[in-house]
Image (cartoon, rainbow, N blue to C red):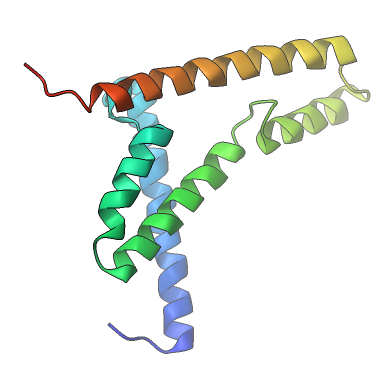
Length: 136
């Protein structure tokens, strides 16, 4: 379909809202155990899906790139200290306490956060690689 500039702008905002809603619904389902984390994709899975989507219509590819961008934006706002959301959390703690956390505490929190993210990446990468092998 073809839209004029204002309609296209409105539709893009609407699509972003729908996408963000679906992302949060999926996150809730992951946390509650309704959806298995095995269905997440890491860098390898995302690359594989990107290669498939790149062979389809340009609009599908653009939508997929936007979807990935929105996902990354949301993940970046998680309150993990090595992401922007973590910095926001540190600033909020500083505001509530009237002083920042000690550098030692901040460093420890960042190290634990990094370890958590590293384990998460290993987990999703394991399943990305596992998907390359046919099930018996």
